[in-house]
Amino acid sequence: MKELQEEVDTYISQFKEGYFSPLAMLARLTEELGELAREINHYYGEKPKKSTESEKAVDEELGDLLFVLICLANSLNIDLEKAHDYVMNKFNTRDKDRWTRKNQENME
Image 1 (cartoon, rainbow, N blue to C red):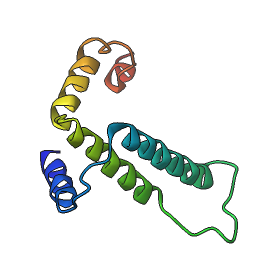
Image 2: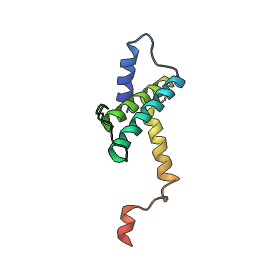
Image 3: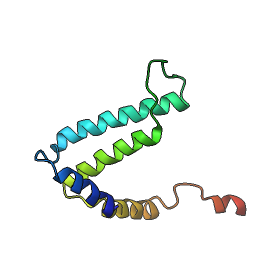
Image 4: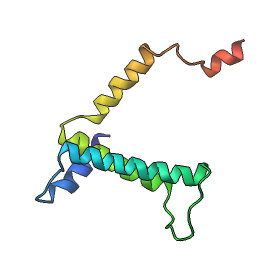
């Protein structure tokens, strides 16, 4: 994750404008999430694409969303790997017994 954050920072740093404000990036994040939702709906939902709509892939939209998320984290000096580790620790402690583990199903 650190390499991804550095790559995005190197890209953004070449422009005078730099990162957008956190509020503007939140709006972009919301926009990208909407585009991802639209693609998911086209592929897995009941709403097929119109014949005039261009073909976009779910992985492309996830990539757009990831880029903006990294930009937001970078602009706020947030280490996403540390944030990830924090969340995984939370899931592995607080939520450790919340879901049925696959190996428990085989024991019953």
